[in-house]
Length: 233
Image (cartoon, rainbow, N blue to C red; front, side):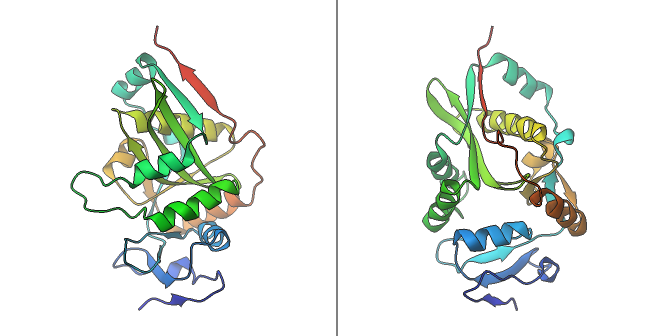
């Protein structure tokens, strides 16, 4: 059994999360900015499907990326050099969320339900949710979005409408945030795609200790001032 959350944004300790399914901690509550920020600051995030109650998770071990461990394959490095593209931040947040919500091949639905989209757009308006976007030929070709508290960034989802477009945004995001003092990016759950980019699993205590350190720091003023245009020679 897991607890049902009340009206106040109070969560049980992450260590109480279930092992099966890995990380399930609580249910209920709402997606208000106050509750979401409280959750993320404790390493907890919402993840549920249409028709389900809000489910809150804190899996262990945790998939994270330490920016200095970013892996750029030879083929991706070639793409970074040879394509014409532009990287923007926060110019099309709602569009990025909608694109991330599109069902993937082999999937019937999405966990980025309209309720989630509305909640994270509210966070974006408050300056806590951000998008990194790849533009090609004047169109949004790929990107990702996530949540930021202090100098901590929590990646949520990414999409590509053109080959490697999300990877371009990801590489630029990691390199830029590293320059702003971000020492760890939360990737939540293990995927082979994230592992290929250098993300790895760490124990819960390592994740939470680094999380506490990063969320306790003030973000620099230029944290979200980023724009890059690349033209192949």
